[in-house]
Image (cartoon, rainbow, N blue to C red):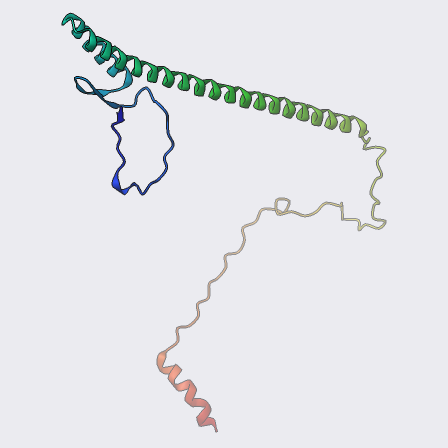
Length: 190
């Protein structure tokens, strides 16, 4: 019973997780009739067929030998299925625990939110509404000009008039010859 997956020379002794007897793993079985290759179920089927053929040929020793080989792979397959079932149950148990934790956290969050809402509601009922008539009023200015009505003048309140167009003035272009003359002018003045 050798695994068909051999170690490559370049693997540098890396340790790989052993997945046990996976029911889909391919094996090479060296039986009395030569090599049989396949998954455990395929090998079992092949040895059972060989045992039937040996029974038809009245070779009871070969029948027993093939049945023992088939039984070996049957045990391997059963172990693999048991391990897979145990892993599945463990995974489901972990998922149930996680779901229970999520449910508990959700309930706690809902309770906190409800408590906060109740607290806000209590704070709103404790704060008495203020009657604007009984609230302190700002002091009015004692002296007002007769034409001041207390309103602020806004652009909308001004009469509509077109603004006078602005005249654009251009900067005169400078002549390069004039620029050359201006530095000499202070020297000539001396």
